[in-house]
Length: 316
Image 1: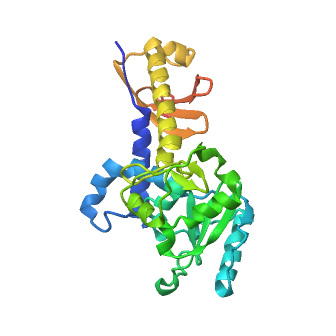
Image 2: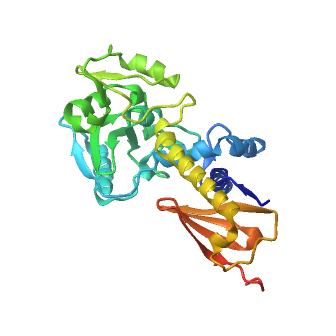
Image 3: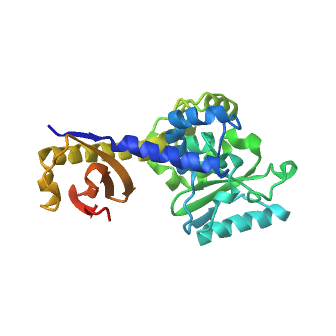
């Protein structure tokens, strides 16, 4: 009986490991809690790279044009005003905002608790490579969606735990938080110091503002500090799709290769095939079968499958 070995989600994790490995080796990315301890890099890649890359992708701001909304009492002066105007123009034009994020974005396994809990991003005044440590404590706080860029104010690193920015978002741009309203009856409000304690322990907390209660606008934080949203919106749907595709592909092979190949391949003369993920883009999953020299296209929306490449007998 034919044995089919397939685990597309494990293959996907391996692809992420290789992506992280290559970017670490090239110096593009580092690992926050490993640093230069080379003997710990490979064990970390095996254990934590998938979640860390998901976290990294969650922090990426896609370069698309956004509408700018500025809170009423926002004031920036001097060089800060010029820097803020530059950032806002980049946001309007759909340019690269990533260059203004903190250095943690260049390190895997570096969760952003402010983003994960409240969905608020903090931008530095200068892009990477142009910052001076002594002059790098002025930050622009904003709530960023795929369509909008809500300017909430200026502050410093000490303000990463302040409630004033989430309160400004609620009072001036309530539509941004409407989807996170959980109850008409507010819970007991807590101050910034208490939120700081909770955040440092990776604890989610309902935020109560002006008589309204909201669950984490940033999607929430897991016990390890990583984004709950990255797992709920990225990892879990991917796993479900790839696990479903694995089952379908396995069953089709077990039902007979002739149904799969439409007569283009001779009857199976082997006892085992290994199916490996090649590419996963949009609704198409490409899978290789080395034993038979096949590349198979599977569309998980329609469950349609077709051979897109078949190795000829002469090896070409």
